[in-house]
Image 1 (tube, one colour):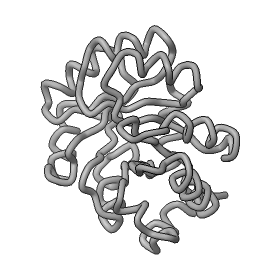
Image 2 (cartoon, helix red, strand yellow; image 1 turned 60 degrees about the vertical axis):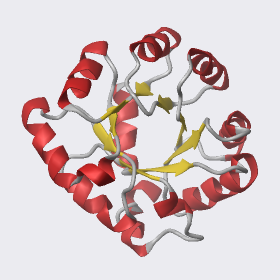
Image 3 (cartoon, helix red, strand yellow; image 1 turned 180 degrees about the vertical axis):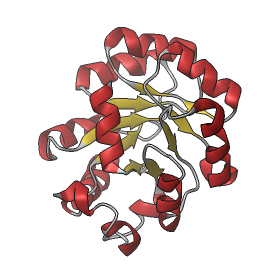
Image 4 (cartoon, helix red, strand yellow; image 1 turned 180 degrees about the horizontal axis):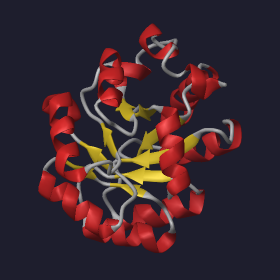
Length: 202
């Protein structure tokens, strides 16, 4: 778990691939982003062939890149992800059953939380980190406020975040930042990120 946290911190951003053709265009996009310094990707399971995309990425992308699965909502998905060997999975909500199953099969899980109560509950369940969602609506100040009572517990802001806001979230204490269409709609890495991810590409 510690290794996962360290690698997410170094990655700085997670590219969220929510694409209908994730097993084709999504994989090609992930490979292009990898070449430009992105070291963590997430394929969302609400799209067809996400598991196929994860398996392709396992074969084709560098071992220096974390490969995760998002929008996990069912217990059976946890078992499928254990079989394909993801580095982490992400849920849109906090579900103790999903957390328990992920711990049983050894798939690190980042549950989605919004309130201090949910964050505290996730911490008690033993998760390595949480996804703050929808972070864009809550704002950087919200994360700063959470860090008062919850200290350095790892938080990954996701949802409605623009590329230009990434540095602000990291400066506020985010472990890393989840970027969906704000990142994946670009053919090349936006200039706001190229310098930020420079160390990761080394």
